[in-house]
Length: 216
Length: 138
Image 1: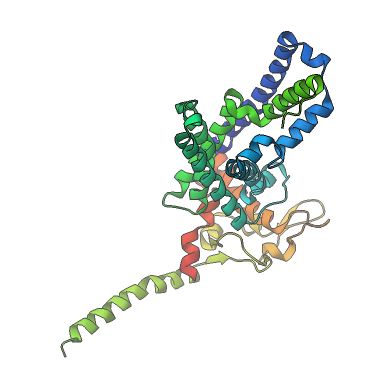
Image 2: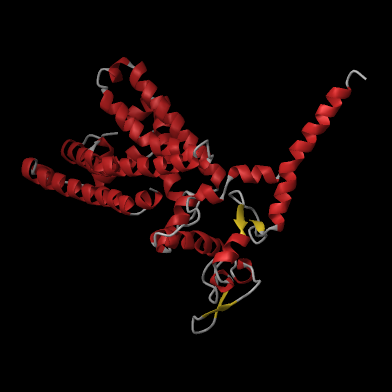
């Protein structure tokens, strides 16, 4: 089982992730050219980049400043979510063994804390959908499913690292849940990993270049 | 001597509890070693318990204790440890760092055996770096 999930299954998952995202980005690009051609006539890199950068900086946009608690939670969530798997020691050791490349790695105790931050903030994000009426009315089971898909690799990874009861089960479950997340990304709203940059560029340029309005 | 029975019972219990500790020492004598290379200043994961006896019954020494010559032939480097040549930072002569050497030596071989469909050893991180073993040591 371990051989399968780290071998063919890993290739399939990464393949679907990269290919799926490439297809999605390119097809959206062509769709825009077909349906909203005018975007390209007035496209401004300056306004686009401004919008992207503003929305990447904590409290960089007005809505973030209006909801400081949510901003702190969502930024901690996203930063830890990205940093932990990329700079995790064991992931890089496997990378080194397989391809002879590896990145700088985090100390294990630090990645442990970052993992806990991801899990705790996911709980907050789920509670937010229950607690706030204006978010609740636009929430369906699908939203919780996406949160679960995102949180699962971290929960199982945490349990595997600490070797709770059945280590082999947790590790295989961890790898599988990571692969499920990778596969889910191109087909769900999780594709905002890449599409964030496209939508911000689009809105920033549309509002900025054409109307002179800052979208942050 | 109201408590004699109690004391006797305690003595028996302590003696019984000592058996696992004693039998572990037997294991050490049979060639089970804890891989705790001093070259790593600080170990990030629990040290690995390695059954040298088991491996020497199925493999020739030079499979692991290798000493590649200039023509990349595998000679015997009997008795040498990984850390004798492999250092934490790779250099021009020995391009494989110590951590990778350990991992490739154990896990790499276990993975090959699995690929060949043969009985093999552990390949998952926590099956070698066991937390329980580490706490027994202390």
